Amino acid sequence: MDVIVNPVGSSGNEWSLDDRLGRHLGSINQSAGFAPFEIEPDPKSALLGVQRAHRSLDEVMSTIAARMGGTCELNSQDWD
Image (cartoon, rainbow, N blue to C red):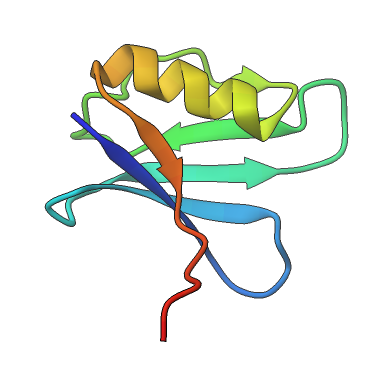
């Protein structure tokens, strides 16, 4: 299943995770610390049980892609 990582707000440290059909899978939050990126899976999503703490957004996206058996892409929202 393919997952889209959608930026949330203007702070640049939170993303929403949705599949291509628009179903919410969880979120990613960035904070200070050794593993500043954390996956917060929705309680009913297939991301439950995935390793939550990561050092980079790329690492998070690779983990999600492997877990879901598809791609994990950042939505740049560069359309008009």
